[in-house]
Length: 212
Ligand code: GAR
Image 1 (cartoon, helix red, strand yellow):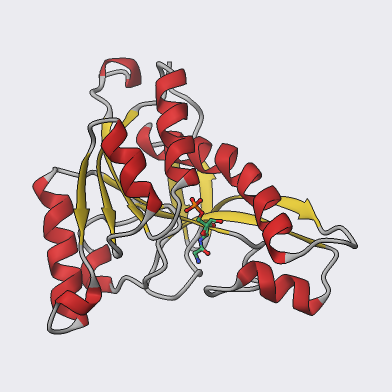
Image 2 (tube, helix red, strand yellow):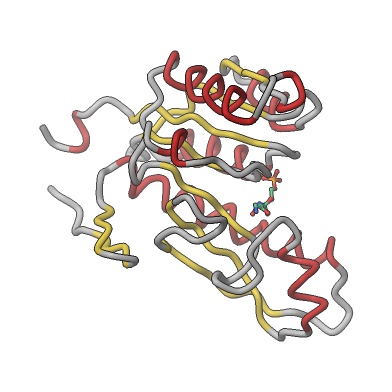
């Protein structure tokens, strides 16, 4: 079966915040008939995540799984996994999802969970990557789109792009410029995943030629 005749991959997107990366994915899928993926559900770990509204506006199913509503982390994660499985999700996109997912969750989608992170990994892992880069005084930072493994901000890297730091940058201004880059890089990487063009060899991700 050629790529173009394959039904679009079913994408589940997890968000914690405003969801501009979710929006970029939705826009990319709309604009590109060969995108190869369709967002079928958006999940959040907080009821006030702005990304939920963006999904609802499009009539996309949403689920909210707050850690505090569950007896423990394992139960929370198992329910989140079941939510995505109920929508037959094939690729999971972490688009500003600020929770760590364990191997028990990741086992549902081997090499098919992708994250965008606002630094050039392996520099500045964690929840404050933009602030940490500014505090360190680096001249260049950027964003990384990578496959997710059991360690935080660690899995095989699909793509990275640099963003220069300006002398007058504060965290918000710099993060905005990084996000603008993420808005192109994340959809491009998700498209590759949807077309099954990524091959993981050790820590390296090879991008296969497009099949005709
Ligand atoms: C993005 O910059 C993403 O890289 C970051 O959160 C932002 C979400 O923005 N993720 C992390 O820091 C994960 N460690 P958005 O909600 O507007 O898409």
